Length: 243
Image (tube, rainbow, N blue to C red; front, side, top):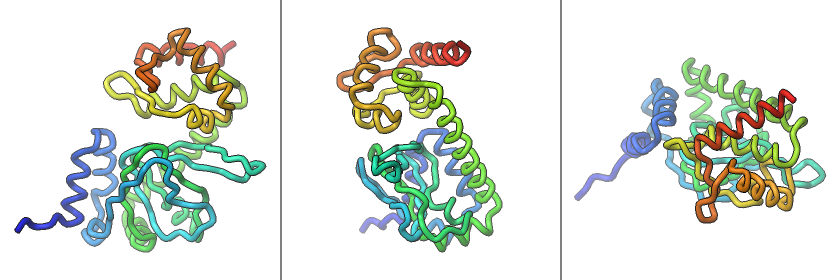
């Protein structure tokens, strides 16, 4: 009879499947993790558009995103859903609340694509983080980077409108998702509208204009961004910012 894989064997197998940057970061993140914590991690697979954390509910679990994209949602602006941040592997959800000693989650989180995460109870994660300076430093750095990126994005969006916002979004997505010098986006027009803060009508016009001017290409119903197109968009934004 074949022996059933335990949690640690499954975790090692998952790490081997990840792309090099994510694999290296996760290995660094877990390098001092005690055996009892590794045995407690559960590998969770979530489909697209799944809300796994809701704002103001009690913090009970911590999730580590290792595959896929997650978005943060704010419902407080006149009742309109506003996606103010997207997250990419490796990112931990729930650790910020633990560091700030908050009882409830600070935001609603929803998957943009199918995702794979490591899940563990709040209490076990908190015990580990408070006794592992390596993880504490990585989480502090991650929190600071998140806050800086959010403020930078908000400053840029103050000055850019319409197609310029879409270009900024595509530059960001290329930097996060490109493989082999190209980025394939399987996003709907609604996904792009939610992330850019623009209407679907404006998105349709912007995508058509960008394709006509060679900033992006199409691959079926997907958007394709080559490295040369990414650099062209960078040059456009630099010129726009200096004008």
